[in-house]
Length: 269
Image (cartoon, rainbow, N blue to C red; front, side, top):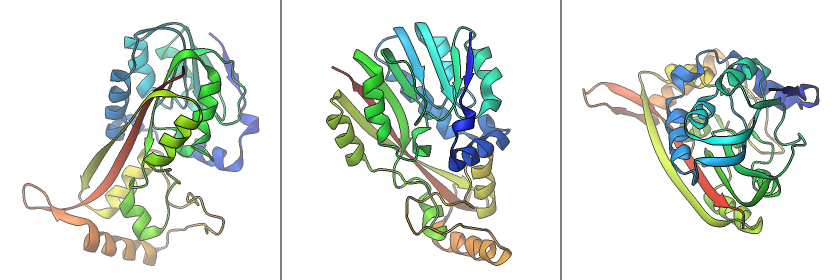
């Protein structure tokens, strides 16, 4: 239908995030956990018939494809930060309006019956603000369904490098949802420990899914920019084997990377 862009209003941080995802060319081949979570979110949508659907942070369209196949709506608005994905998203839902921009700052029409966001709001400067923002945008009786990650996500990386996004814990999300007036709130967590042959393979996997460890991502006033050096990488690999290795079912040594996902469903009275 129509494509709108507000890219000129991106902060420096959001421009960096958009570049990382634009360069993650094989995202769908490596984002297996994210795909599982998308299916879980779809299963938690209460009604397959909707009047208007808003998707926040659609990315390559993992969630969008499931919505297009299973949910019927009179109106679709698909938001994404990275303009590279515009054509893909439009091909998935030709009737949808696509808006490229920062979901935290763009001015969207209100009165949606369903708001969905898969694996995106952790990139917000203030993730918890998504709750109040969604409450304003939903019509009475509308449903909010989204996923993000817990403070245990990528715990190995944060332990060894001090780098990582700010992930509010489940209690903070519960409080934010209640304060915004949501009812029938359901929160659940799922943990995935993915095995890799080497620590370097973990770093490669993270890069292929749009995540970088060489920029400041911790919510901290005194956080310093993190840069990889040969000596730092060597120490990282040694420490990873020392603290986070085990043997797989064949007896081969592997190192794990933890994903811990938080999924949320809530309704506006």
